Amino acid sequence: CMAIQDKFNRTNTIYKITKDIDLEGSALTIPSGCTIDFQGGTIKNGTVTLNNTKIIPSGCNILEYITATIEGGYKEGQMLYDNSLKKMKLWNGTSWVNLDGTALS
Image 1: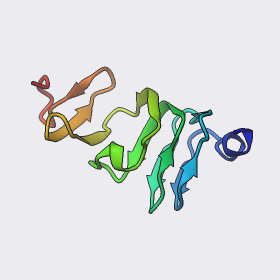
Image 2 (image 1 turned 180 degrees about the vertical axis):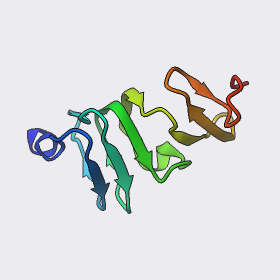
Image 3 (image 1 turned 45 degrees about the horizontal axis):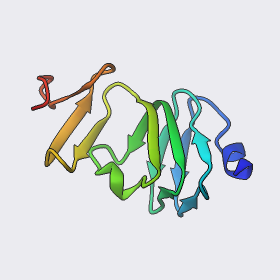
């Protein structure tokens, strides 16, 4: 829905999510270099395209905050909990690795 995209229109900005955002099947593109700071809300029902995006809280299980399809890339240094691996992982700018920088297994 265009009204939601209009709210995400500035690069290098911190966007605080305090309530649920229902994309109603549409796509939301996060501008380059932004931080999405979840403070009680979620993003669901559509596609979110990240663009060198940082997610707060760092180390969260992203599935608790974004149930929409996630495309694009995280900001280098992003830490997230991986449900299937049952551990934290780190985005090194190219791929997901263990927190110590070694390859995920």
